[in-house]
Image (cartoon, rainbow, N blue to C red; front, side, top):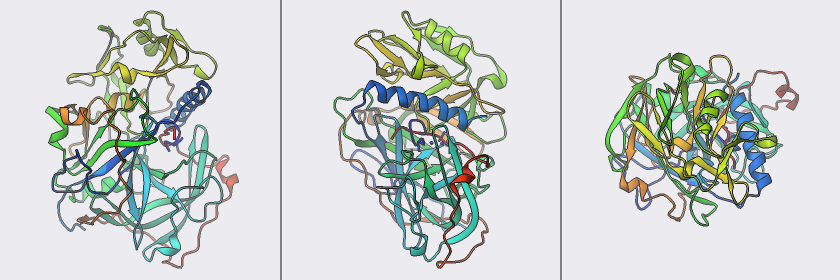
Length: 469
């Protein structure tokens, strides 16, 4: 994703892995669990406006335009900023050091703030390449552009661990300059969970290396996300659910998983939207590529074409298009309980009215979580973020390539809104490994790469998901 640091890590993008044991209430299957965390600060109307504007801008940029054994693992996640983003933890280097990162199926690169960072990296865990005996400096510039900021640094290669898995030579970005406000404690970076074809580094993503090497018992990964957006006085960070690697946690869903194959060569996790209903009425969805939807854990809301978004709100009496910073968003009466359901070819999956209600801007008017988004080029028309994904158990399958959804179990639903200590960033034991590919550079005494901030202007850039941190 900041799919999808948030990036901003700002609003969208929004989620990351935490290789630790499962806390109470979580079950694991032959592996470890990665908790997700969430935090909820008090926000003013001005805060929400700035956040909403950044959400649209960031997504526009983002979409514009050798195996030890077969195994499984779970990363318990943290729910941050009232469902604005979800993160977990991974570890980099020798000896390994843990980092909180957003988990983003809408992008495909891993990057973290480097010890040499001179701008925008205060109060977050920093990667020290000189302290890792296995680090290789690839001396290749790396930069990421977001709707409201940018980050730059260099590509490196080192051991990366998560949920009991290890890739000994994973390529990642060591960021040395970040636009102010892009990173907020405790998140140090982002883990892209999209396909290699959209990686700006060209490197195989951590997950894809494991899946393609047969390191996982089953070639898939899955998410269960908690809901706190409607909770009373949530803590700054809350348990966010789980991210499983190599298996599905049957205690977190009920019934069967409905898999839908990707309609194109894998890049983003794309599914065609087949139907959408609002307040019981159907909204016409074009067929073909015009219905393509990116399933993006790194995005907070749901963005779609203006014409369809207008039709959605036309089914909600009293709704009006927003203006100013709220341009592209819509208001509706807070007294209205909005029921929306989406189908991607199988069952129709309902979205909780609590998730549709983003925030209130007055005693009577609320902002909806579906907003107008204009993507470019070959990017999908719809971006389906956590507003939808909190309502289902979602599975991302490597082979055959597909996305699956299932209904959440009572066990999973019981985690919503329950205040508890968020999972800690831990390293966890290594139970499986895979080889990411060849790389160059020198060893521990490597020279840190200093990249000019001016390179961010006019250079090649990509966008990843953003989450409001």
